[in-house]
Length: 73
Image (cartoon, rainbow, N blue to C red; front, side):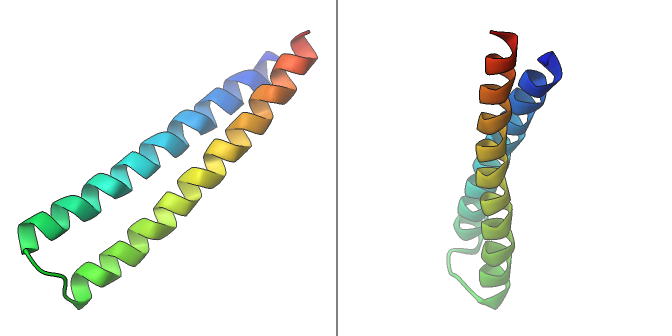
């Protein structure tokens, strides 16, 4: 019961951190390079995947939190 709530909160936090991390990394890379080449594009694709995983974790976290709250009520 409480486990679902804790799992939901944890997944939400991990997802949020992943999205923030990917946004910061791609901006940092472009700032350092001052142009976008194939290596930057590859890194952007990889970071896009991490961002999508982050969104999925946020959604799963939300579901776990809703289930956890409804079970505790």
